[in-house]
Image (cartoon, rainbow, N blue to C red; front, side, top):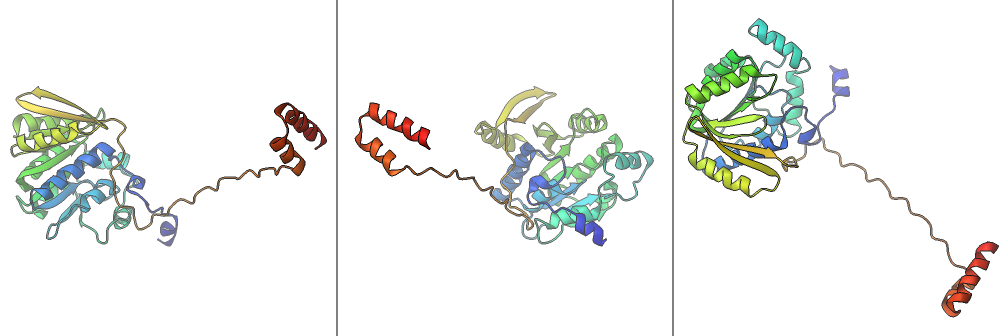
Length: 296
């Protein structure tokens, strides 16, 4: 254990935490959570699948007084079935609860409620209709994602936001099927799409969509398109040179030492050269300069 602590590199900034959480989604998470706070919406936060804690760290910053933030992940523990076990071994072999907690506590004074278990337990761990924001990124397998979406519907407040990761990635067709099945057959309404995530609600998306469109149209670092499909308005955002969100640095941040700029010493002019420059005509001055250069 001592050796592990000695070799562990603590993050100095959110960007130092390993994980897949691009600036566009950092911005959208922040916007939705800030909007809920402005609207006076109170409710708990939930993340299914945390990896090393990158998105959880941002979510934790938005937990309000009296609200609970719950994180559920296997953290390298025993998977519930063979397919999930194979997925965990392939994609998350380096994930440990200790790594997550170290990263999280680099930015926060206390941990969220951590459930080290399959996401299938979440309905028995979190009360129905208590969450305002749920982020689902626990599995890429259709059956698990389908059930996680069902759990999110039970746990969310009427106008709560659910965020579904990897809904369109080439290597996650099971997620795509589960997500669009929920949109077409299970009442999920699309609020917006990023390159990586689908943001949705089982409430009325109209008002929040209009506010989101106004915000996105005012940003030069974000492309925007709006399409209609299956009776839904699909707002699609994409980053254009977007930077990471402004986020407090960790307690382990060390400012880089500035590199000193070398100073080239300037040669002092001799008295004779100064007199030549100041008093003689230009033609004579040039001749004097050449003579002085030759001499030394």
